[in-house]
Length: 193
Image (cartoon, rainbow, N blue to C red):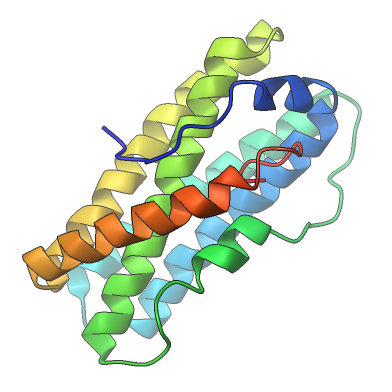
């Protein structure tokens, strides 16, 4: 369903389990960045009314996810650590060239967002199935559904605002590129790392 070209090595969960505090901190900041992305799309493309409506709803949902993750951190007696560099996203955004028409820029941003959500969904599924901490596994199973919905929403908007055949070709190229990125990651307790 997600179309990812390279699945995450299940041994990544073993790395995560050695430092749950780190994955929760990284996850909290991923939710904060997802909120920021939705706000940025509203600010950058206000003329797309349907997109603005959906992004407004997404801001509320993502910030509520941030709070849920932050609450998990607090419940375990920890505090939110500092944000970390996200090498996955840094490499991903190098795929499309800068510039182009506003529509092209929008489609590219939507495709990036769709892919980040798809990979998050895939990682959350792994956590839900493999974590020994059953309470946390259930937590990730619930979030996995949201991520899948976000992925399809972003991809759907990209296809609506761009020329469908061109968008689908770009999407396939981006998936191939992402597989090369992810092949070098999965060695840290980070949602995309």
